[in-house]
Image (cartoon, rainbow, N blue to C red):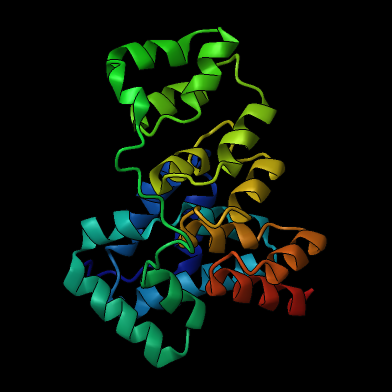
Length: 241
């Protein structure tokens, strides 16, 4: 850990200037790894609190926070200390996020991947094509390289991505790819489709909640298909509106 303290505002200032989410994620992780566990907990709580107040920059940082990436970089022991500090400080939503909960429903794709009969390289090529029939077939694929290629295809339109985001059942990793897509993750309709899908990973749903409009927050609260923590986050946001 660095011996020179870095203030939250210095970290925020550095992160706010980064244009891409993936870059923000890695820079955020680097900055957090320079801090002590209690400082990490306080900084992450500040990001969550800012997102709850719908501060645009804080929402961007909250969406960029990837606990799995942070854990790989900082180590399980360090993250355990962050978790304990968050618990002691009463940072409930941070504690939930750090626990990396499963989605409300989990897709078991055993025996269901008929696309595997086609070589993965061929499927990637199909995902690059402008053929609508071929693109539609790719919506059921669970190969992440195929999905990444599909999401970058200029022939794809928002209604296609909404079908992919709303698909049930859905593989959690596919939903993550949509959420991390530079082009599509900024679309409000796509975010709404993701958060309302019980197969979307819970940590993603908890991040998206902070960007929703009031009528959609109510929809989330009323949806019994969704993880209770997503509904609770939406309820808290409504109370603050």
